[in-house]
Amino acid sequence: MLVNCQGIVFKSYKFQDTSLIVKIFTSSHGVQTFMVKGIRSVKANGKASLFQPGVLLDMIMYYQENKNFKGLREYRASHLYSSSLFDIRKSSVLIFLMEIIELCIHGEESNDAMFDFVYSALVKLDKEEFRAVFHIEFLLELMQHLGIYPNGHARDLNPYFSIKEGGFVNHKSSFPYEINTEDSASFSKALEGRAEAMLKKERKVVMDIILRYFSYHLDNFGEIKSLKVLESVLS
Image (cartoon, rainbow, N blue to C red; front, side, top):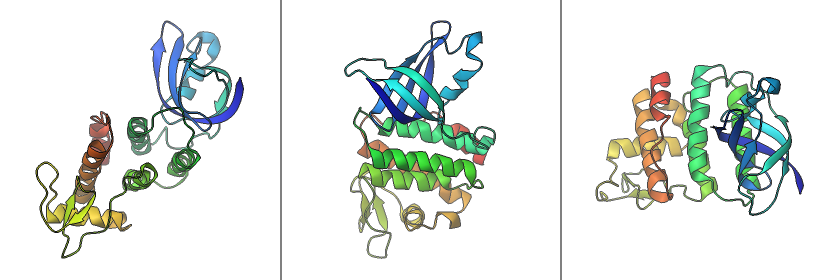
């Protein structure tokens, strides 16, 4: 069956001499894995670049249920990046976000709201001026789509953020779920839409809390390999 859809490339692997195995988040059938034959040959004229992490595609795929590797009849970039692949800050954010999204989104079920959110955010990253808090705001909104968004904000009666309870509490949580009052206040600032006002030190603290939060509430959420590169670029 031929299916017209859009796709967001998660990652690709070399296969044999000229082919790629590509993992793509599709608008119609969730996450799918494709075998793209001959894409790395001389005759392919550089089309392998279309399967870099974060590339946005218009596709016609051969869809067959229960088949491990799907095929592509046609594919082209649906949005030509003007800055995200060339600005090292944006490209680092793009790779970082793709790594996280891949760990968060599983299965072949379509999710229009999730797909539209990710697609629109990547276009926004490309078109707008770079902002050092873009990835933080993205991950907070991603929490909403995943149904794990934290409750409340830091207040005098509830100054501690509990990773385990997913909200602000009036007592310290047990290790390793305990967040001190200063760091909890920084995280609350981000949740209140005031990420732009955070200092560089606060941004690092908030990112650490976010990743620990994802790790606790999502299955198989492991180490983010691109984090160190992102931190180096944004330092």
